[in-house]
Image (cartoon, rainbow, N blue to C red; front, side, top):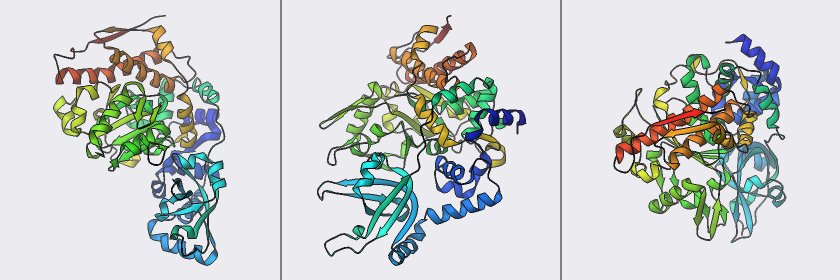
Length: 468
């Protein structure tokens, strides 16, 4: 543990700092880490003791029922008339019956909900919201469904007050680049002492689609390197799709219910273990994905819309050296062997350069870092900053680049700059690091394309020059 860095972290970010050891508690695995750290800081502060943690464990066990608790909760609801719990609620609009239902995942059921709650918290209608819900029992008439027996009568969302980006950006300059990389690595839950500088850059680069609009990336790497864990636990605004059927209605727009899909509501959609995901209406949805990846627009039925949502594709590849195209093809579904699809990816993150997380005491964070719910809001706000102009002015890309090569390099460089230098006053070293990372990631795409179709895609040779 770096005591000098710890002192600086407390001095600069004291009110939003937490000891990351607590996020390794077994009960923390039941809920996303951004939510666990939110609840912990709200109830225990940023420096909890053993008694605080014991009470926190009891609180989560009581307030967030497990599937086997369903009948116990319903019994208490019937006998006492109400029950308080927290969960991620999502409202469904039943237009045929002119009513609303709300999903309560922890109980595996749905309930009715006061319209005044929906009007106050519109997020319930889109991506859903975590919060405290008061359930009330009421006798249903013979004509009503069983769901009408339960009413969500009160809802208090877990949400932050507005967090200014300026304070975060200004505090960054009180850290060296090495210290900043260590702080960010700890914040995402990993131990910086277990990684070299290049590996830390790869870890931090996983955040690029969360801060850069319409940035589409592929990561190939071994299992257990933390790629899925990061996206599932780092942000309210991302969605991980894993092992499920994906339809155009889910992803883009539901015509029957007249509601937007996930791409319209998220900062980032992550397709985990992409080879195992099934697409309903395969040809149509892949065609729409390719169209969307080109310029951020899509059409479905009467709906024409645009979105800033980034796409991330994750696949497992059991290698710790530079793999060849054949290794890519084994890990990816058939549609991702298509050069038209591959060319729409801005970059390939070489996850095969990262070690597997074998021992928690070696690889997981054990020291101070930023609380995730604060950091997730910072990442969300960084999407509104634009560094492309700086890159255009200062960087001269050279070589046999295509327009898509240039665009991919600049997107990745812009995203990494936002993370390394959120105030926009980046050093020559930071700019060089960001541009070189962009070139490395995009060149892997270009090399892949050349190997698949050498007559259509040139053997890439990318260089850059930084001007003043």
